[in-house]
Length: 470
Image (cartoon, rainbow, N blue to C red; front, side, top):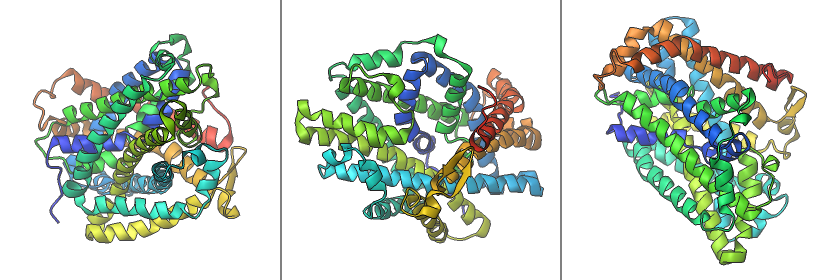
């Protein structure tokens, strides 16, 4: 079958940005930054995005465009042995399993969007509301709608599905984000939040904080998930990969900045005396238990209808971010099945979709409804649900391992000169540039070392309860 392609570099940038801009960027990042040095954290995050993550992005995109294949196909074609083929399988299975729990989180967001639209803000802000919702039968109604939307986008293919959705959803997301920031700035005490976010405190930049900033940068850009290899295989040969990579990285940083100017001012307008240490850096905790209370508190100034409208506007924003990320994640195994087995997109979607939906239902039932799923395993001194196990293994643990192996593969198996030649297509100034030298050096030395350290420490921390670094 003829390889699908993005119609332009902009189409790729918007699709890749849709993958990069997710729940963590919008919600967890602002609190993480404000508690760990404010603008100092933001500066280090930006540094890591451009000096650690960008070389990895360029490697993934170049590998995909060169081979015109999915991660499994790319590793198999160039690797020429069983070991690298296994790494390719890891790069396909990982996004599939991440898609399982990410689908569940997207359903939660869509459910809160629906309840906000229906004026049920009181219910969302009530104690125990989130626990009741995720264990209710209506959850599966919302799941069916989210699955339908996701599959409709993916069924359209690269140009008419993924790219078309990104061209609509991403500009809307940016406009909505800016509109909410402007509105929040009009609230009392909003500037207190701006202060905590933008005033740098470099004394708080401990080793643990720097590790958190690097992990946030790496994961928020969807690196090592196979997404950029897959999307790279859809890029036209004359497109400038370096320019596209910088654009995606820049948009990710921009969204992180804007989300900080949204979440923190809203928090301080709700309670100007709040202690930041009491706020959770967890996206789930912030979105579903804390922020609904802030929206409900707004009814004193703008009425219940107005507060419900702002809540719905916010959840629509987060839903767009989650949906574009979910589409990107699922496209990896879909593309892989199409390439490896020669099946149609529709066949790949329905066969993979059935397995993913079944696993997502198990995830959704693992919060107390079914005991065997709710207490599946125990490690690191903590009982873990099926949802926790999937998250710990495939998101927290395997991603840095995939990144480490990717760097070794590109530099030592594919070789530097092949990487340089691919990046130089569409960018005549890359060859011999300082960027070329930095990309080659960093991918072959300290970036894989950093990822290896993160992987080993993550395994020790999560599965054995021992943090080796801090």
